[in-house]
Length: 155
Image (cartoon, rainbow, N blue to C red; front, top):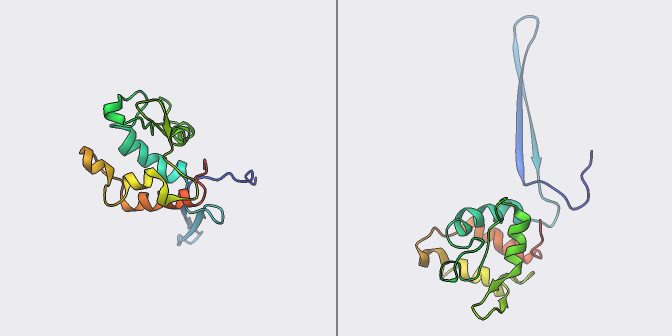
């Protein structure tokens, strides 16, 4: 059954190997590999590439729902109690709540160079290093830039 437009799963490769024994006892093996890829023009996914990292490194220690300002700095990257990527996306796109109640964006779709989340997590700051946490690895930071460049979709 074909999937609905603009829906897809995370990139993954499935390999199945089957062994067949014939009537003479000879064993033959065959493998089939299926690659599931993102649609054309998409190289990064919030749900697949970014949310797992934000959840593991950022939301786990500091940027969670209800974190005091001195810990989370008004940024919530969690997926809520259900660990839901759609909630994580909504939290990220809601921006940073400043002490005066104003909101500052974290992501500027199409413009990674001016998106604060890229500036904070990338060189030279590597934000988590200044808090004693583990910084996002190069692959995640590259995916983050690509995702923002591609429009920061809820994908």
